[in-house]
Image (cartoon, rainbow, N blue to C red; front, side):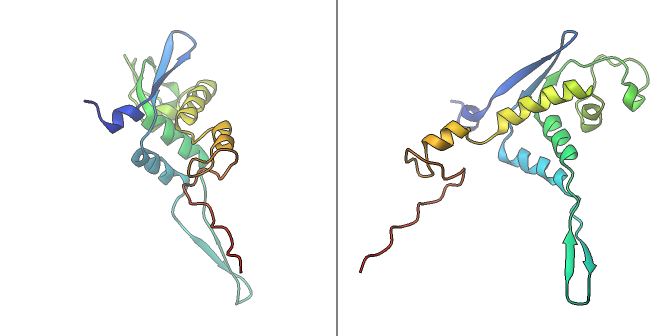
Amino acid sequence: MEGYAATRRKVATVDLDGDYFVRVKKLNRLEVEQAELALSDNLMRQRVGDGESVEASMKMDSSAYRTRMVAISIVEWNLDGPCEALKCPGNHDRWPVDEAHVRAMDSADFMSVWRQVNALNEGRKPAERLAFRAGGERGGDAGDADVAPEPAPLRA
């Protein structure tokens, strides 16, 4: 018996030019949380204004998030040869799967892989949200949240 996790496992292959491929998986919640850590540098910057106001900001890095999502998602790839962007010495039979080598990918190839990773890990599709509200009712969109509908107002 395979169990719950096996029923959620999805793998897709992105074919690249030149007989190269990247095989990616759908991530579990823990893996997504690991990628989300790359979104922010976790530093709060505060600037005090006129003595009463405080402005806070945080640096967001969506590029680092996408890179980490792709790196964590890769099950297998056959990228090989010298890695000029990283100045890797010699010829690799196969590039190691890590964030540095994901960053070294051709931009168009990276975007093809990112689109597949994003598609595998997206929430409900718009048509599903329109067809089913939270709680399974047909006919409207209550978003992706699993919340109970508001109760009807009491009549006096």
